[in-house]
Image (cartoon, rainbow, N blue to C red; front, top):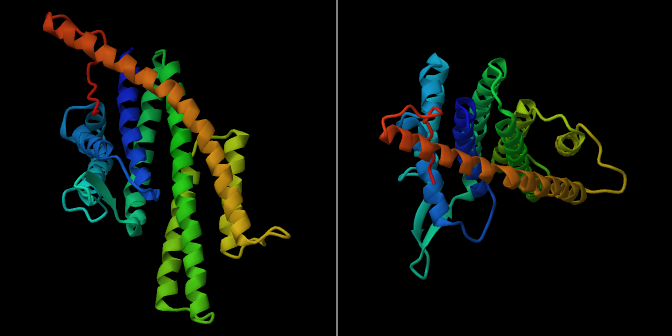
Length: 299
């Protein structure tokens, strides 16, 4: 594994942990406490130690400083010991459990979406540098594209699910007030606007152009336009119908994106771990490592 591929792999590994935080925007009966601890450690260790991410941040001036602050705020607000969003506790049987405040999904999106896109831009820059220097980056670039598809699928899944719930809550609040706007409906309406802004941010940042992805994206746009009165509902259909159809389209995309990602990502990580071992062995012998030796994977 060459130095460019090693750097990209560590950045990809970080972005996977950032992306996986969106798991807590999915309403589930339980979440794995060990995976929570792993993600919690991984979010901060990459900026606390000498890693490719930290090196790029330190050499990016004001923008780098802003990103590091965003990451540290992300850790504190979402994973920190004083977080009201995610926390560890004990269930009725005394076993450890992850507690999630599902009323604070917007706070998770506030950090996950821009951090992932910032690191994505770093990866694009490093790969471009690799191409310019005729480095073989085909394998790692393939995994990057697979991770990006997976990220957008999961982001759309969680955001659209929240959009549907908020839309139903808004209509219920208006119905209870006999059509009048109330403080409650205004509050929900503001959250709907924020979710739509987040969806548009994910869309506008995407580099994917294949028709399967674009068809899913188009269906999400139609749903938003129908909800905001900018497009009529299809003849013979009601909101529950278009909500369900959009969710099904996203689920099908996730199924294929996850299969593609899982087929290549573990192989790349294993290759990097073997490279790190070889580099450490070379250093122990007083030799120069074959690659950069800058990886710091959090398990």
